[in-house]
Length: 511
Image (cartoon, rainbow, N blue to C red):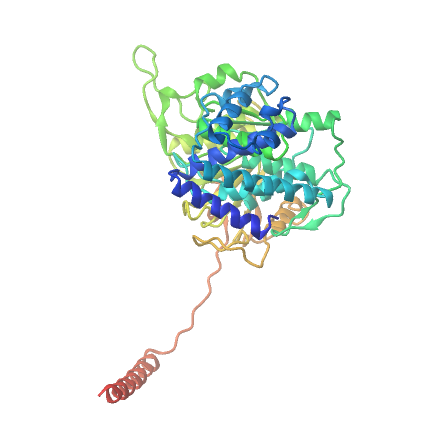
């Protein structure tokens, strides 16, 4: 956890960015990310000459520091010992801090962060945890809902989904709309915590966490796989790609594999042909409708293409979240597993595209669980009701066989935070209980349908593949007992008399 002093300095830094003309928080975040990258470059051996080392040039006197650091940044972002996806992501990135006083404060803050990280490392904690906490706090400071329905998934919900999915070093893990790479960082932290010899501590959300005793030896084949060939992501926003890259670098991922590419596009089919993943975590943006002519030809099961007389596709306005689900099913390896956040409408929508989507999931996959989330989870960005779909890929293009036998439904009434715009942490920690219920669902079968329960496929088929929790929940009717109307009226008259007496006393007091 970051010290109050560091948090105070971060707030000061934001104020300086604001007063210095960078009112857009995303722009400010991008520039802070570049500074962090320049500091990190020295640690990971990206530079050899002193002129490009943070510890050297940030102590220079009588130089135009903004101009000098711009030159260093332009050099670093093109270094060939970075991986290809990083070089592509940094194309077009510009260092735009021109105010010396702002740069001076930013340099001091980053140095303080590194000193704190080094102190924690001497106490046995992971160095990247402090850097990661810092970057997470910076991300939270943006207060931005993003564009096209994008908004950051709360960190504790990411943690919850990782506990459900249980990623390992052997996995290849993907987020089809990676944004700032929160899901990939969450999966990395889960793996690190579960490869430790240390006794577990309980974190603020009630989950076990180990912050030292790393069993993955530096320089080993396991470490090479984990930091270079485990985490993959895609996004259509170049700025988000760079922020996601920086987030992964701050958490010790040596070669972030984040690609600037629309997952739903035809280009994706050509560039990522035959790519498959064993784990997928995602919260696709709820963008509404997109142009079908711009989407992949391979995505043709949810929305059956309409053709004109010449056999060419006719433009259709289609729901992007449905296509993301179809794409995720395609990208999973056989027996690969996904946890995906979807708006509630996906689970019960009655038009053909929604029904097709659910049929694909139930046939191609074993839909293990639908976890209903509280409607305030994404406040203050949106109050949209959402659920988490958990499913395992079993077949490709299954037309007749159903690979789902039954689906487990669970209602998460609270996520441990207030469900208003402030999202304050509450004393209760319900998420670990939900994970335990998920893990033990086959052994702990409930006969009623009040909180969690299984629904057989036959019943789901009769309801047009409806997968919404409320469709199957058993609602309890509680009879309300009211006083007779005569008694209520009598109390109203007595209350009015008391008010009149108080008003007369007030009138006498003021004359």
